[in-house]
Length: 181
Image 1 (cartoon, helix red, strand yellow):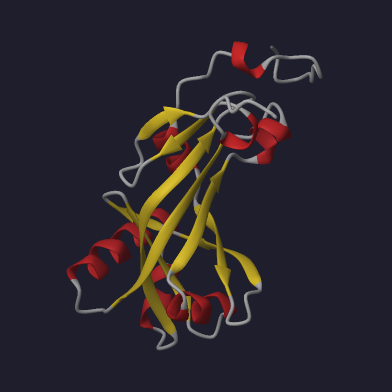
Image 2: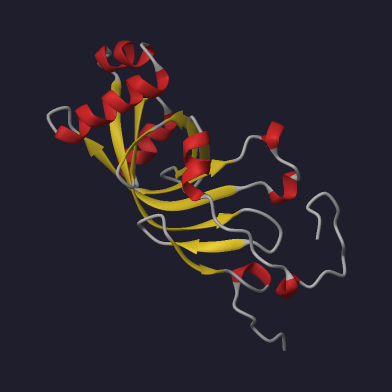
């Protein structure tokens, strides 16, 4: 089935999934979208440039930003890496990786802080040095717990904390061939 057209009669069980390209997607993205939750339960979506050390991600953010308070007070954060719209063949089937993560503050004395700052400088330039020297900027680390990866129609996968594919998702809403009653 072409991703350029939609066939309302297509059987997703006959669609052959595409090979996951999780690493390529992460490497193509210069920033990550993240969803946090405020004290009253209001969701907040924001974005930030990120660094990566191993399978964990780090961001440097101002403590004056709304999402920073949410990160400090509630540790569950949803991350999304998404294919650039300008290169997507079909916006409904955009390649995307969504991760459930746990946030933790990284103190400047932590060796992870220096590794993350070095990676941020390499990826995003001298502005990182300026931000790192400002007193209102702090760093968070995000540990993936689980996630999902989509790279086309009928091509979705469960992902583990190591960013490895666990299994192909099948059925409506990611369920496994559940009979409708």
